[in-house]
Length: 290
Ligand code: ADP
Ligand code: MG
Image (cartoon, rainbow, N blue to C red; front, side, top):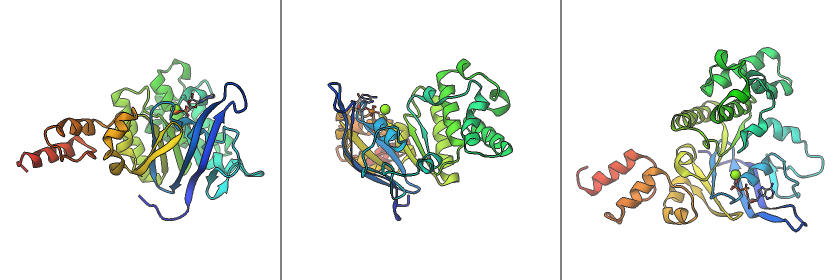
């Protein structure tokens, strides 16, 4: 994790109310501030309705933003005259509802949509479509001519992710990417994201209500509750507060759940355990075997 240098993304006392000024107004974000630096892998975690997707939508400039709250690469994205094309070129977002971002009927054409719109030559576009589909476990020769609406929900999610990957953006934002995937699909996507982050030196932002996958993918957690940041720190530091996280209705990683059970027997067992292997090693220590 690198944390020097100016932030690539920053929210400064961000507040957002849907349908502001109407009887149906809903205050989604009460006060959220954080800075994300290049190359960081940040999990934005919190229970449902805590404001994760609204934060993501602010990066996409989908909301009517007030100036002075959302900054990309040092620039206020809501300032008059801000060039939004830069944001679109550099921040790839996979939304929570992937169907909303599938544009074409045919898989290959859909994944090609972004690169084509960005003006890339046909040959480079084809190469990226092939690479992205293969990376997501949808082999190009087999899937490029398939109809999107004939695919399963998990496959459509992967098509949506492939379409964003094909843009080669330096920042990748995924809103609940594991939802609707079976265990094998989750494992494959997790491995792919870890590999991509290394190969492409990505800045990665992952929203999730479950810490299982996010704790293996991220270095840092920003925890939201009711539109506020309630914790922000390195993954292990945040996991140390397992009780508080459980109270917030955030799903803990399996090894942390295991550690909490064993804590009844060994009260000084650490809570910030990321893998089954670590849990086993700690237990062996406690039993005096290791
Ligand atoms: P999360 O992604 O953590 O589940 P959201 O950002 O989707 O949280 O929602 C935060 C709050 O904003 C919730 O209370 C939700 O009901 C409200 N909200 C989200 N989208 C809309 C919308 N389009 N119109 C009105 N209220 C919304
Ligand atoms: Mg959401």
